[in-house]
Amino acid sequence: MKIPLTYVWRNMVKRRLTTTLTAGGMALVVFVFATVLMMRAGLEQTLADTGSPANIVAIRKGAQTEVQSGVYRADAAIIESDPNVALDGKGQRLASREVDVLISLPRRGSGQKSNVVVRGTGAAGLAIRPQVHVIAGRLFRPGSSEVMVGRSIAEGFAGVQIGSTLRFGRRDWLVVGEFDAGRTGFNSEVWGDTEQMMQAFRRISYSAVVFRMQEPDNYVATIARLDGDQRLSAEYKRETQFYADQSKAMSTFIGWLGIALSIVFSLGAIIGAMITMYAAVSNRVGEIGALRALGFPRRSVMTAFLAESLALSLVGGVAGLVPASFMQLLSVSTMNFQTFSELAFSFTLTPGIVLASLIFALVMGLVGGFLPAVRASRMKIVDALRAA
Image (tube, rainbow, N blue to C red; front, side, top):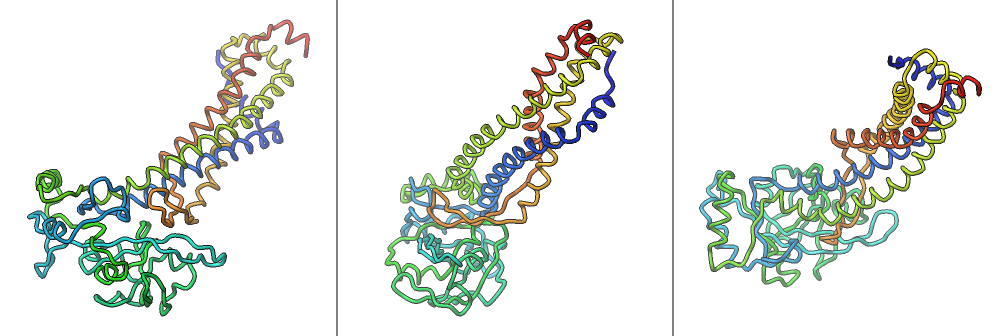
């Protein structure tokens, strides 16, 4: 014989206060757990979406970021001559020689300075990144000391509005436009002309060469061909993989931080659930004796109390996910540990995070309700009826 689920539900409704407090505690833990996972997913998605699988990034061997890299002009010319480099409608190769440097800009409001990536690029760099759109002002003119800023830079930093002048590289740069690159890392950059950046920062080499493949399916053959050229000392990655790799250190830190916080908070929630269920067992000793006298086996009694604890945790899990989902409306800005530059990203809620959060809540309910359920199932019928 099995105890009907209506019995479990009725007891939860009857004890509204304890049910609400226990579920609320679990909801808080699930909120923290889901939010940390959403932060990690948002960071990874922002950097992964920054690139295109049809683009290849060439950087110096051993360099992990463009800022650390150096590709000489002769090497850049050889890379651009690869037969798998795509052409635009005018027959020009879609290969962008780019320079990446770090500058400091004051944050809006606080005035505290943070590192920002300045990217030197050109017409080809814009052509291979269709996600970049000018939303105010205009593009910078080739060969000029003009720059345009990403949307996150425009929103988070002072003195970067259109018409302002930025001072870096021992010269003044006029801000002529603002661009939006969607939920990508490009939104946290300042873009200008490559050759002007080379002159301003006295660079003799580019940071990277990025090119669009004519046949993306021939990626392996393209890499093998470039690696086999003894004149080159560069390494090559798909642009998506290149930027995804730059999130590893930060996402690992966030992941471990989330685990630590979740363990600390979950212990409190488990103890709360255990106290609630022990109280439920103590208050229903007579019911337990009656159920056993009616022929319900120990296993059914134990299952009923475990089901009640799991139901409490499920309610708490859903209640925690609801406010966590609204975190997607927010954007945060932090320093990327690998590039040491500012990066803005949004919280991202995925089906995997929803499932993981609910499983986490159910585990808390299972652990918190197991011992009280065992105690209820082990009560002797005579002792339970006498205690009632």
